[in-house]
Image 1 (spheres, rainbow, N blue to C red):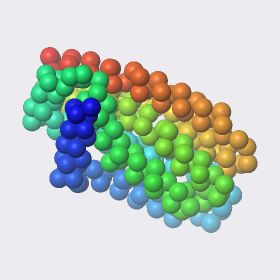
Image 2: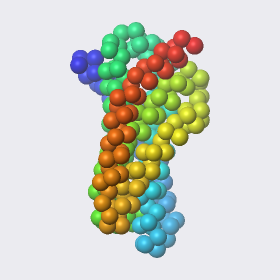
Image 3: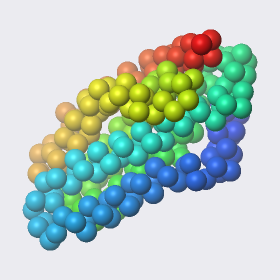
Image 4: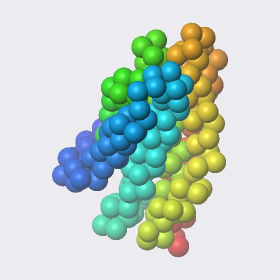
Length: 222
C-alpha cells in the first residue's frame, strides 16, 4: 500500500509541476466542444441525437492525447527503470500510476461532461447517463491506452503507432458508452450498456496492469 500511495503522490506532484501536459487534453476537449456547439446551429433535435456520441469521441481523443506521454518522461529521466527494479509488486505501482493519471484527465473530463452535454444540447434526461458512462468508460480507456503507450515508450515519438494499436480496443468502450447516453436521452433504459461498460472496466482492471508491466519491461530491454 505504501508503494501505491507514494506513486500516486509523486505523479500528482509531477502533474502539478508540468501543468501544460496535464491541461492539454482537457483544453482540447473543452475547445472542441465549444467549436462543435457553435458550428452545429440551432437544430436542437439533430444536435440531441448526435451530441452523446460526439462527447464520447472527443473524450476518447482527449484520453489518447494524455496517454501518449504517460510513461515518456519517466522513461527519459530513468524513473521508469527504477520503478521496474523496485516497484514490488509491479501490478500495484502501475495501477497507482494509472489511477493518478486518470484523476488528472479522465476524472476532469467526466466532471465537464454535463456542461459539454448542455452546450451540445443533450436532453436533460440523458446528462446523468452521459456522466455515468464516462465515469465507467474513461478508466477503461486509460487502462487500454496505457498498454499501447507502454509498448511504444521506447520508440521516441510513437504516438501515432500507440493510437493505431489502441484504437480497435477502444471501440467497444465507445460503442457502449455512447449507447448508454443515447438510450437514456431517448427514454430507454441504459442498464444493459452500463453492465457492459462495467464488465469492460473489470476486465481492463484485471488484465491491463499486468500487460503494461510486461510491455514496460520489454521496452526497457530493447
